[in-house]
Length: 500
Image (cartoon, rainbow, N blue to C red):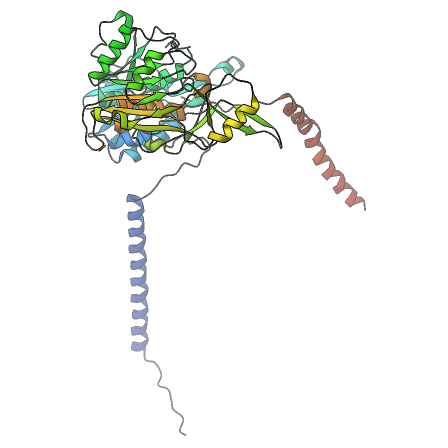
């Protein structure tokens, strides 16, 4: 077989091969750059922000996001913060979240008044600013409002006497900024009449419901005290009234004012104390299809193998059937103190065009005890076994003349009733915020501000550690004995190994 001789590659053939390889590499580079540009462009327009911090300091609440979605125009925020203000970085990061959630409706301009004096003076003259404190200026539709740094944080300055700087104990920037935004957009504040004269909790700043008062006022709602005995009618400027824990019953004249207000499409928030004797007030609610029962909700909790403890603090969950609690669906809250059950009778009031909706239901295991003053544990346990699986309502919404379709806005009379008045007091509210979110949703539903119903910004609390005497004793052993002992033992082992 003859050997086949290979022809040597010519210079022109080698050149063509190199050109093809070069073109192939060039096409690949162009495609890679194109794909990278497309991925970056897509990521720039479609991305998500997550806050994994312990206290979610910068994550905006559901209520703030829902409010920002309702903005129809641009809101301009001018930041006058010097670099030495303790919360400057916190405010800048928070406003970045507002810009992201606002989807182009929030413009932010940062001005250091110590460096950009001319621009700062120009805007100070425009907005009539007369303070040297760091602040924000919000401008919307020709109206403006200032938010000072002192309103956005609790600052501890007790260490300055020892040469230490101010320390931020709680950052509450979202509460202050969102409240100012609502003020600007809505303009005039809504008025919530607070009924007095029956030993209700006072509205003072240091009173038992001061946290609730501040929380509601941050939503562009102002309280106005109402003593019905001094009035011929509930004032026209009052958009809704709140009756919280009256200890004495209303007079016939007061009940007439209350019924007249209801008949004129009034809005009422009613928190009843089951221990108070208020038959006329309960009769008014009964006329609307909600019967307040003369009982107390209780539950037996197992504290040991054969030990049971009886508690009257009610753990309940919010239901999703009503716009009041839709965004709190299945959230649990504690209702401290006495709580009675409610019986809803929708069939009895349907002909009067009254609709009832359950709002709050006690957890399984609770029972309604009519003989709630007894100390007979055997009787209570027997009653618990008989009725522990019966659903028990403790909160309801009543609407007269409205539409069952939430998309249809029709003027109506509205009422929210809860058979517990203690859950809004400061000693209960500060343990969790679910009760505040419920009251906020109720107030906004009563004021026909459904777009503001949602989970509100969390109340800032300083991180504290409460150690018992036993825990302190263990901590002393760990710090004074165990921690020095560990490196000493390791050093001894290393020394011994080197000797051997």
